[in-house]
Image (cartoon, rainbow, N blue to C red; front, side, top):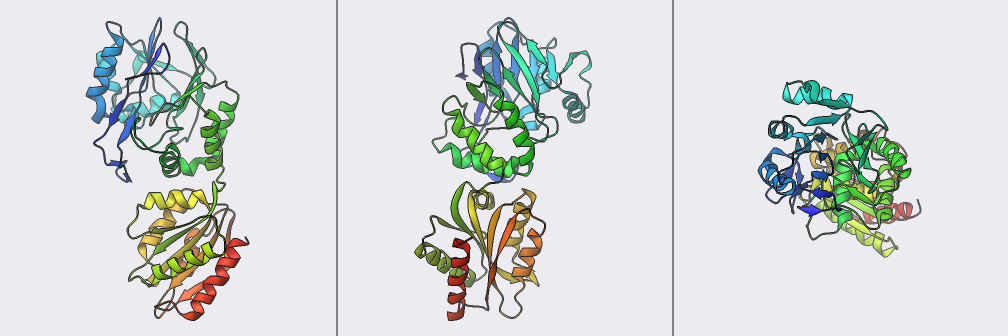
Length: 386
């Protein structure tokens, strides 16, 4: 357990055994499922946890509660890693009220095939709930990143319970930089919904916030401007850092050779940061994260089945799904007899907002030639001047 303020306790669980989140995102340092207890004249639980962490969560709750009972469960997000233990809490405290919005309770019945009946307290934008010294105010956050999501502001201690916002991969006590795993979490989980995140940030800007309590990762209580600024950058799709990601999908190594030569040329010409992602080996979701992080992207891929090598196709489809935009893109293709990668890559990204494609397209026919080296030089110059 973690004491947040005199009356607020995090009774969530650090899951150190999980290796994939949502069955796809690799976790080197586990995952935190946060759930908060507000101890006042009436007792409030803010969200539940994933069923895999339920036993430890219940133990934490009982230790913090003592002989008291829970009066309200605030359901900010119905996704099973947060709403999966609701019925178990209802069974433990049958008189407990459930606080949510209209969409919450629609989804509640979809998950559990039962009606909340008279337990439901339906709230809408700006509504408040007083539980003694603490007053909770509710703000709707649809599509951050599910339609029923809301966040809660505790007025007396100025605490924002931010649902999945400001969360990260990793346990709360993971010894790692917040920004890297928070960025990977945000881009891959919420990245598609930048406009909706911007709307929520505008609401938050009107509040005096001392503490941010997310449903994943550590509680944030210092330098909040830093974290909020990161969310402003990420949700507006602006590049976070000046630099180049070279995303490479190579079959036998010749395309990777071109990618490595491109990296050396860019660095020689003064590029601030150049990173290569091997799409055949590296974590795909980290590559997606870096594509959003840096200002420039170079796509280097082999042709395959009259299209493009599938690891690159998967990568580009991920970018498109997450609303990739506002970047400059260069292309390197390889094809021994009929190069098709360049047109296929451009076709996947067709319709993306504010993408600028470099005029120079480098076409390799099997291995890198002297002519290709000259083309790489030209492409590098174009990228660094765009």
